[in-house]
Length: 79
Image 1 (cartoon, one colour):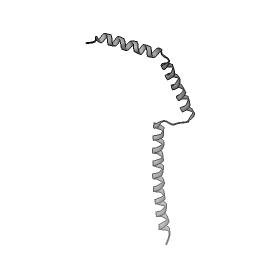
Image 2 (tube, rainbow, N blue to C red):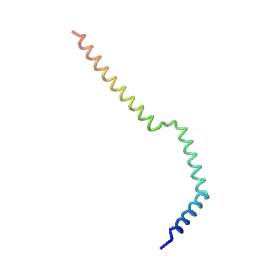
Image 3 (cartoon, rainbow, N blue to C red):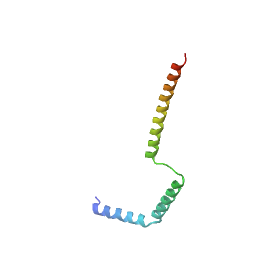
Image 4 (spheres, one colour):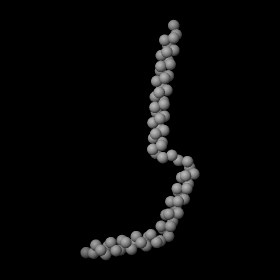
């Protein structure tokens, strides 16, 4: 059976090798590129989107209520 310390040592060496490899630099550069591109797209967060969606739903409900009230008032006014 393999020694636990041996496996931890191998894992640490692999992690160190990957951190020092060009893959880490590529990942860092790619992440920076994606962040810059997303910033140009003028995106909103999910939280802001959900807030605006709720405000729109409330506005639509209020508009429907006002339209119904207006129709009722116009119906009363007509002989």
